[in-house]
Image (cartoon, rainbow over all chains, first blue to last red; front, side, top):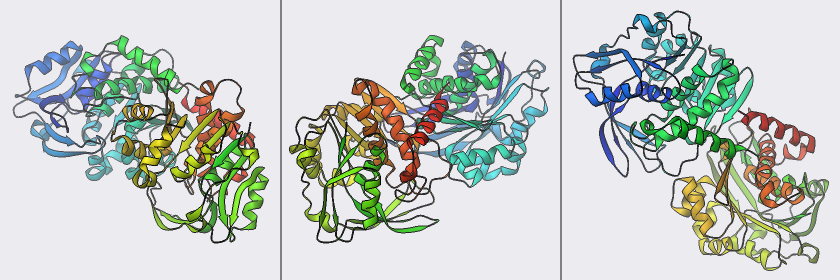
Length: 299
Length: 299
């Protein structure tokens, strides 16, 4: 089954201590869509400006991503520039130019509205709402977010949490949202806000799933060389949703394994700038790392 | 087989945002010895002053810890006081009074010298050396350390690394020692300094073992309530060595599982001040959490 993904479609200019790369293909929806495309057909909802490079459209198409829901509007594409320190857990935003995103209203083509798997990748909660408003009853809705929305759009986000099955967020965001440092307690508080499945991303330390009163501790794939972690979280959730949409059996029986697949796609994402490494991945390479992860945690 | 453990035997005064507890039984050797005692007989090497409370001796004895190597010297017991923030990853030392530790020379009783399993818990590297100097060829020597020794006794520590089979250290210490932020690369650099087994502790994020070119990612037991994390790392390595010394089969075939047992004992340690929670543990409770951990990582 296909996965509908809404989120940001952006140009990212990224500086690390070792290199500098302007105007890469980025954004939460781009990363999540490419990640999901290894498992399932993807329907993308987003907006870009007239300056959006033609070869990025080609790249989406190479991954068989349905672009009927991608608006091309007069104006400039959303542009983010950021800088990483040697410790890549620390990054700072240098500049954010909203461009066409300022007036974006997601419009779902008719063919998108019956999608069973919906990923509301990181974007303003009001836009995530707007996508859900246009859908028939999906089988699984998962939302991601970022600290910005906790700061400036909390009421919208809280309303959204009552409409989603799964919620994915960073450790620090979980702590901020719940005012609770302990992640087990934080997850329990988030369940009370609505979502049945709570996934807390911990970057290089993996992720934790809380569902039905049980926890799952998912490892991250240990990498020897991290080039650019931008989009790793989006790749994680994209890979996860892609895997879930095609796995046999119930969602609950596949959730843990879907996180492992998400982790693996995220690991590839970190090994290149922007989507450079992710787009070179194959199903076979993913399967190999999943097998390696299985061995890495066995005792 | 018994485990010989040398390290600090101290009184800890600990403040957290919720409570304050003066003069608890603490020190790396105390935590490691109690943790190891659930699996194997322990021979303790350390020093305390004449002010050392009688009931702490009783507590060691309750855990059948051999105290022939514990010197009781004129003067005061080593005293550490520290304070934790709400985020318990952040703590600061308020005061350190070395007391009898200032002139400590570990002397091994004859009955200790043939021990096959030796844990050089956190203490000055020169003292760790001094213990090894008095031993016949042990089957397994594992050393722990702390940032202080990297700062003030690096040459001693580097010499020690050529004499040990295993080395256990925190993530930040591994980064400091190797000048390498990436843990996979850091572990490889540490192997080159001597140890065959490198274990990097990541606190609530678990630990990583590097051995024979392979990695093992050990989860931490997710806790809902952390009362006082002091000694968790010592409990981890103590539980690990205790388990290893009695497990059937080769050391390498038991290393991964030993870390899981260490993780579990460390989780109990965090649930009470000082050794309060650890001393209430039973083999059965440990086994139950090990089984829970097995389920927590299964996918």
